[in-house]
Image (tube, rainbow, N blue to C red):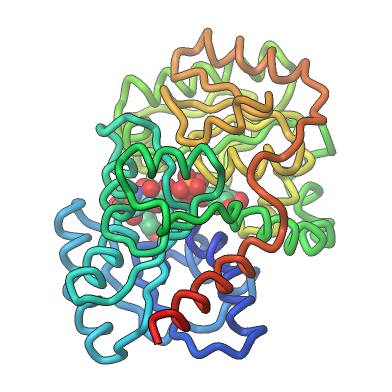
Length: 358
Ligand code: UD1
Ligand code: UDP
C-alpha cells in the first residue's frame, strides 16, 4: 500500500523485490497525494507499476481523509482478501491501512516500525504508535526503533531489525540520478555551491509565526554562508506562504517540487540541506550530506548520533548556528540505517511467516 510521496520512494524497493520474485501482489494507492509532481512523477522515476486500485481520497481534515480511506480500503480488502497488507511509514494512509486490515483479521506488516519522536502533538507520531500496535510484523529499521517497540510491550517475536528501505531506494536510484545532468544546470547551480531546503510539516507550515521564523533563518543562513538556497516547495508550504503573505527574500529560490531523480541529484551535491522531512534526513545521512533539521525533535536520532544531522527547531539564530556547525563537518560518518538488501529481508520474513501459518 502507499499514498504519499515518501511511501512511493520507500516502498519502491519492496515492490521491485516482489516483482523480481514473481510474487502475487496488488499495489493499492489511497490517493492521499495526487498532484502530478507529488504522485505520478514518482511512479515514472521509480518505474512503479500502475496501482491495481486508486481510492482517490485526496486532501481533507485528518478525520475526513482517514475515514474515506477506511471505507475504501475495507471494500478493497474484502474484494481481494490479501494474506498480508504492507504499510510503510507514518502517514494517514498507514494508519488507515493498518486499522482497516487489523479489523478484518488480515495480517499487517509495518515497514519502518518503531520510530518515535515522543511528541504526540505531531500527527505522524500518533499514526506511528497506532499502526505499530495494530501490526503483526514490525520491520524496525534499527536497534533503536526495535527497542522503542519492546519498551511499549510489543512482543519480541513480531519485531525484526531489517534496516530502512530508503537505503535500497538511494542505492538503486543514485546512479540514475547521476544521469540527470540537467538537474543542476537547469537551475543554474553548481556542485557544492548551494544549500537545499524542504519544508512541509503541519506544525511548521500551518503556523504563521514558525513559517516566518524559518524563512528568516534561511535568509540569514544564505547571507552568512554565501550559499544560494534552493527550495523545492511542497504544495502545503506554498499555500502557507501565500495565506500568511510571507514572501521569499533574496538568496532563497522557490521552485515546484522535484521528481525523485532530480531531487536526489540536487541533494547529493548540495553543500548543506535544511529540512523538516523525515526521508530527507535519512537520505542526507546515507549520502554524506550535512543536514539541519528544522523541527523540535526527530524520530531519527541515529542520524544525529553519527554526526550527520542537527535538530535546531525554528528560531532564526539557531538555524544559522546549526548551518555553520554542519558546514564545518567533513562527512565521513557511517550509515546507521542498515545495509542494502532491506526489501529482500522484509519479503523473506513475510514468506517465512506465511509458511509457518500454513
Ligand atoms: C503528508 C503526511 C506527512 C508526510 C507528507 C509527505 C499525514 C498526516 N501527513 O503530509 O506525514 O510527511 O505527506 O509529503 O499523513 N496537496 C496538494 N497536492 C497533493 C497533496 C497535497 O496540493 O498531491 C496539498 C493540499 O492542499 C493538502 C495539503 O497539501 O491539503 C496537505 O496534504 P496532506 O496529504 O493532508 O498532508 P501532507 O502535508 O502532504
Ligand atoms: N522528494 C522529492 N522531491 C522533492 C522533495 C522531496 O523527490 O521536491 C523526496 C525525497 O527525496 C524523499 C521524499 O521525497 O525521498 C521525502 O518526502 P517528504 O519530505 O514529503 O516526506 P517525509 O519523508 O517527511 O515523510
